[in-house]
Amino acid sequence: MGSKNKIMIVDDEKANLLFLNHLLNPEYAVYSVRDAKETVKRASEYRPDLILLDIIMPEMSGYEVLSALKEHDGTKDIPIVFITGLTDRGDEMKGLNLGAEDYITKPFNFTEVFARIRAIIRSRELFSQLVARESRLSLAEEMSADIKKTVGDLAGSLDELDTLVSDPGIREKTQKVRKYIAELDARIEKTHSEWDALKKNEIGISALEDQGPALDPGTNG
Image (cartoon, rainbow, N blue to C red; front, top):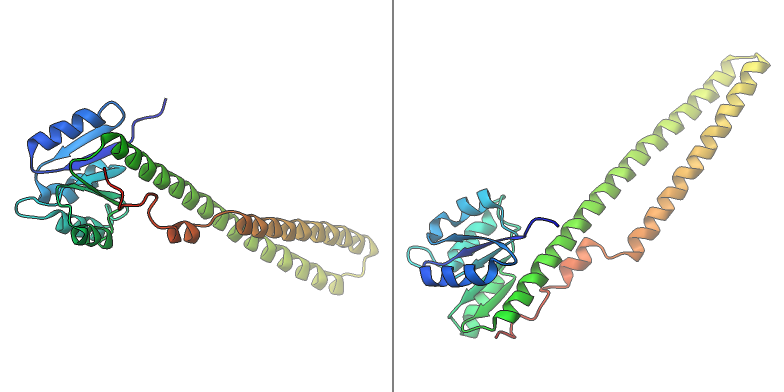
């Protein structure tokens, strides 16, 4: 069984932290933060899979915390979900425009909150897998291009060798090597074609980014 996904809760109210911690703990590893100003530092150390963030807090609002997280390289990709008592549509749109994944208002249906959390974490996991796959594919294509260039250089060297050597035996051997080179080049071309077909038939990162939020943020419990 794999390790639990990690969730950080940022709220200055101890009662809220205890309540959410109690509800989330069976399924997730939960880390609580009361000092909003410490959030970026704590998130950089803890590396949560998702952050539940209150908006109304002393010294630093949830909006300011979110902006600070998005500006820091170590935390900018962590999905943020506002969980707040602010029910105004303008507050919700502000949070989403700043980069929040979702906006949940209190009182909320916890079954729905669980569903939203699972959906966001799952979509992030799939996105990470896709990034890794495309990175490996890009590396393989670079290696293939290098091999193809080397093969081309070798073929050119054989041509030069043919002009310098008159021995029929050596020329016969270079012809065999040239045949192997042609076969290898054909295999490389076939691999490139298969990769192109794969990229056309599978969802790419840009397509996922264009899909927007996994769930409609306007349907809160």
